[in-house]
Length: 579
Image (cartoon, rainbow, N blue to C red; front, top):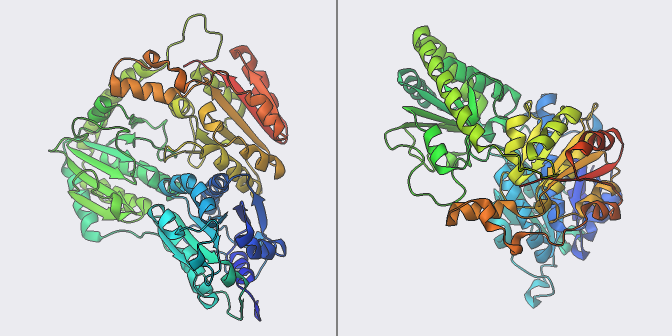
């Protein structure tokens, strides 16, 4: 498109050309020029009842579309950059959130943080007062860049409409280039209303992180080949790099004869959990994590959250362990442990090279001996993990978390799962055999991400030729942060099932209190962390237009879940579970 138009119209035209189809937001007056342009475009504005819901929806949408881009073969390729209908363009795994001035941006910070830790490619925008008016400090004024900068890859204010094409192209490319993450642009209202004849910049292909430094790849291969034993820890950077990267991690593990674990707070499927060399997720328990991470050579691929949740007394990794770090984010390499070898590159491309080298350098006898050791260690760790499982309280009429997860897998085993079950997450990860690109969880730990992200995921799934069922697995404490996310889901006419494992308290706090203060979680049955009286989640969901269900006993689970997944529209199933 050429000719004179406003900055707001140019902004929207650029989004359309780049392949964006949805904008998530809660706008105010300064955003109206952009909203007006969206109303006259093919973009869909997804209204949220709170700014943090908007950023959470956009992040969940982006993470899901990244999987779609991988399936479509457009990851790391030429993004939507042609003047053609959006449905004919390659998948652009970008979420766009539209917020209002400083307080609106501040409201959205929680899930911008969540998107940052999750590596969600997200463009956050906020309107601002006219530049010539800011000196009077009108209502809702604030330093927007200072608010958001610590959780974005780049943040800036568009000071002139002529600069808008370049800054928007830069923002989108920065969000999509590895390591992916949020970016922020502030758009003053006078810039959005100014007229310009500037054209949209072409976006160009988005690069991968590459194959890494050859010398470091060779050193890594030598260290893995010469080791007495090898532990491979896979992080969510593997899943973000696509299913080929997961396959490459398997090839690397097999070539190295390595014991495999997923990093602490793993939130995507980075390795097949039914593989004979996969031993466990590393739990945040200090002693057990230290035991699992002990090896002659420790190779961490795509890791970022591999540390305990609270302060510990000693290092997780022995000082004499040789540490190898592989990933697309230089900051994460050698961050918490020394790096005896470090490869900056796409985790999948690097793992594939290492697998090829090790298949030549490691003799079969050594590999078989390593695999025998892995089998013995897997049996030992399995027994330990079983001890960490939940016990059935006698005479408790509520379902256990394990019973709930088993019922969900039976009813909706192929569903795309967005998880913020918190204390139910362990049961979800250890009992459900997920496929790659089937599961995402709240990596940042800040509550209130999962429910909006599930709504965003459902919008993304609807864009596929064969959409999957979407399950939001969101604990009661998390659900109650933003229950009005359900309003946006109903308003969008989505097919979404939200299941709430409901123990009617912030159980994670009781568990953490036991860790910090001693004793057991049951010792901290504080009134301050219990929902007493409880919120009626069923009626709350119905007030937003969803179909609500309450499951009080295990016997009701199968029938209720089948009805919820079998119906169209938004269903919220509140399932009482014991601690």
